[in-house]
Amino acid sequence: MTRITLVQGDITRQTADAIVNAANSSLLGGGGVDGAIHRRGGPAILEECRRLRAGLPHSRLRSSGGTPIGKGLPTGQAVATTAGDLDARWVIHTVGPVHSATEDRSELLASCYRESLRRADELGARTVAFPAVSTGIYGWPLDDGARIAVTTVRETDTAVEEVRFVLFDERAYQAFAAWLT
Ligand code: AR6
Image 1 (cartoon, rainbow, N blue to C red):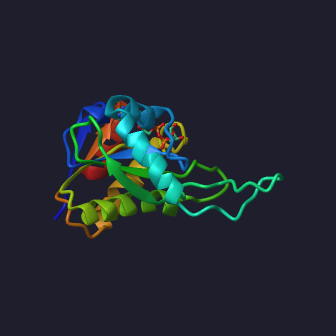
Image 2: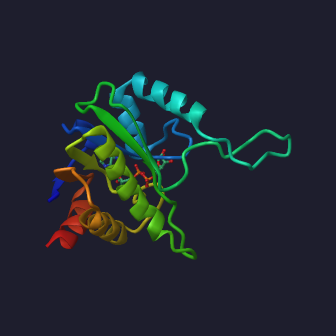
């Protein structure tokens, strides 16, 4: 049985086997959790992201000049790297969907949690810290993001013993707590 716990705070201050990053397809960093992880985790994470990126398949999409674009990790998937200077063994980078008012992308958000746990199982991670994927820059409403996070983890068959949601502020913490009662 996977235990689900909640903590309010900065995910880069956590001790866990794996810390999940709310990344983007480029895997080259950004703001929010992603920026914080690369800042505190140091350059080793970005170095490995670059190597991983080089091995990812090119999209068939081409720019007008014929150069492939859209290369990167598809939304809903997850890859693992070193955790650099963070107090963890791995960072699992997952790409959440940008929220859309016209298209239901819930399945992609659920996939982020499932795929991250699958990577965690492959690595043998027993404690995994997650942020509230997509609920920041990607605009997913917090309550719905919390619902998808909690129900997906509950429904996923995994050897991970503790899934810890690390919520940045009181509002996010309460949104998750509401789905755990
Ligand atoms: N610890 C825990 N939670 C945090 C932290 C932190 N240090 N910082 C922010 N949050 P976001 P997204 C919360 O924007 O919505 C990046 O540029 C935040 O309040 O980090 O998936 C990437 O490169 C929110 O609830 O991720 C992508 O381009 C949640 O973490 C894009 O942002 C997620 O916010 C991804 O956007």
